[in-house]
Figure 1 (cartoon, rainbow, N blue to C red):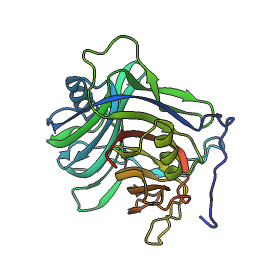
Figure 2 (figure 1 turned 120 degrees about the horizontal axis):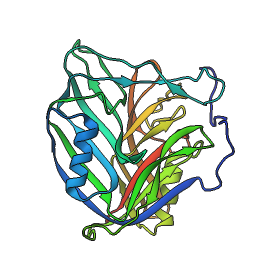
Figure 3 (figure 1 turned 135 degrees about the vertical axis):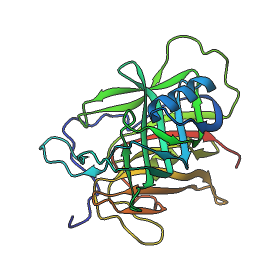
Length: 293
């Protein structure tokens, strides 16, 4: 794509609140997702067992068979700002490297949104958006999860983008047990907002002196990395490898966020985002936990 794109035009009106968020105390858990289940079933069961009603997870290792995924694509319908590729279905066993996942509800049922990187049976390394009901775990996958008990995440129709998108949501009914972990925010960043800037704003909003990101997934427009490389694609599927927001010795906010992403050509890119140079494409789903300075 020629030229730098800093914002995309979406079909609906821009919502005035560019960062939707809810906060509470978090729970965390780690373990393994068992073979024989879909990734949706496995994460939903793990989260339920941990008492998490809405949250995020980091996944590592293991394998899938069968496996289906989508890559980002440019829109051709004249409505959406970006879209998805046709499904890819590699044969044999696909081995997961790493992934991020958001867990919530869609149409009243548990649902996960997963972006990752993997290696197919022919040795090809690629990544994108897993189809959670079609990916069956063949070898156990490591999981580290975080989430809230009093708030959750639900997929809602989003007039701005014309997608059904995960959004932080209050939950009816009391949790089984109060969480005792760090103060934590579930958030959704809307299109065209700088992701690094949104993370410093989220930390300020909830009074975090410092915070870390866990399991975050979303999409970015032509992000620039600290090594000077820019991804020349407006549609990307992204997950956060590591993220921290804090004030430096001068008292200025700093966001240090390392991501991995795939572009529309299936190329993998990784690096640290440059603040002010990483606008959100469609959405970014966030779990931010307060951390020591």
